[in-house]
Length: 495
Ligand SMILES: *Cc1c(COP(=O)(O)O)cnc(C)c1O
Image (tube, rainbow, N blue to C red; front, top):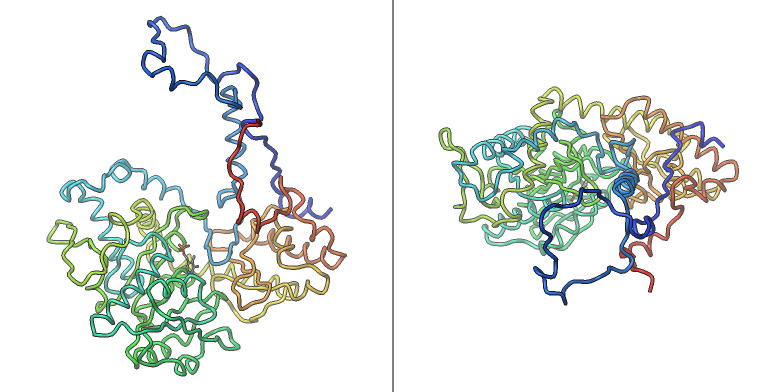
């Protein structure tokens, strides 16, 4: 089977529940007999509250426990284990240096209620990070408070709403291109805006004409994901910004994909008023599975008065927290943001510097275009042009052989790769969205490309092996709908 020659052998996972292991009387410790007078538990806790037995409780040794949890920790596919080309998620390798810095006791053990005089180092880091992100974005102020990308979007649209409200009318609508991230319409709707969709053109970008047609003085602004979810740079952004500004609207950029042009171009120079950054993507932090993130919001000067409080300010050599911002939208998160994630972002920016950040973006784009060109022809490319940090294929060449995107994604697991993002963006039927990031070597990309080509060949040769995939992992095809709707997460002892 070609699965054994291309890629790695995949994950072989087999481990009973801890409840299914051990034997009666086995314990996880061995200590000498105590020479201290024993205190019976029922002298401390009333007898009726003590139980003699816990039904089905596992009786296991220390090595049983350690091996059980170590094995299970290895089922957790992660960026430290292999290639993770999840489009739009920027699963890049995270330097260990960031982790060391986040664990420095002065940072890790700082208490958020510590007085300002005792928090100068932490405040300085926040203040400097704000300056760096402002410079990187070409913006004037940055709020570090939001917890993640979507939270940053919400904060940004709240700023837009507060701005319009302060001028007498919050307005009613937000324009959102069909190539925007799915969180964009959600963030606008939560802020009370109606969504007006804007169709992207044949080149995969929004045409200025399409914006002009729907732009009026009821429109609070536009939310553009740039580069968009096709991995294509919205190259009419300057003209689009002029059209929106011409009718008094604001330009919001979903900047989660800043890794495509960080250090090369600045959103503030493109007419963008407000942008969120996913520092857990562009500026590295382990994320995924609902893990920690941070979604700082950078803005032009006119939105500054509405920023969340507290802001960090520098007075002489002192750093202080300013809660006195009368027009502020208020707090969007407890304390000052995901501080540990911000330490990682700060470290990443300081270690790479301006040229390193630019290089990271360049390599991310080169890697994505390498995959695009190597797989073009084997897989159908709906928008056949250079991409930025990610490329989007579909299953049009496999569908005649009755193999679909889902089958391809499952089969990749047999080759030892995390599948790419699938069926997103919605404007591409059967999408396979691949984002390699700059941290992958050419060898890894070549292994992935070989696996993708092997799957396409298997599809041509009948496709049974692809349709029944995955074969190597512990569990094969799952009922994903039922798993999401009726999760069964609790073990109960047999009666
Ligand atoms: C990842 C992403 C988001 C959402 O970010 P979270 O941190 O997961 O909330 C929003 N927009 C785009 C374009 C993204 O790639």
